Image (cartoon, rainbow, N blue to C red; front, side, top):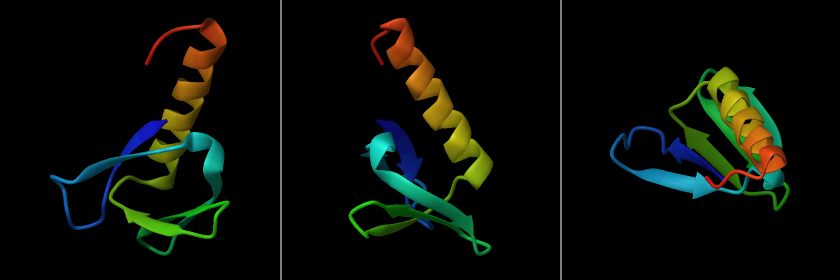
Amino acid sequence: MIRVTRFKAQDHEMIINADLIETIEETPDTVITLTTGKKLIVEETADEIVRRVVEYKRALNRGARI
């Protein structure tokens, strides 16, 4: 699971399942498309989302708690 911030709602964070991310696009806003078909527009850049997913997956592989 990773934290993201809804677009234009900087005080509204949500947590999404990183395993459900199908695509990330910058159009120029960052749009995350989930495998369910749901689209989320977030404040973070695509690079930041990728970094968070990689960090999350590494933590899982180490057996760490997030």
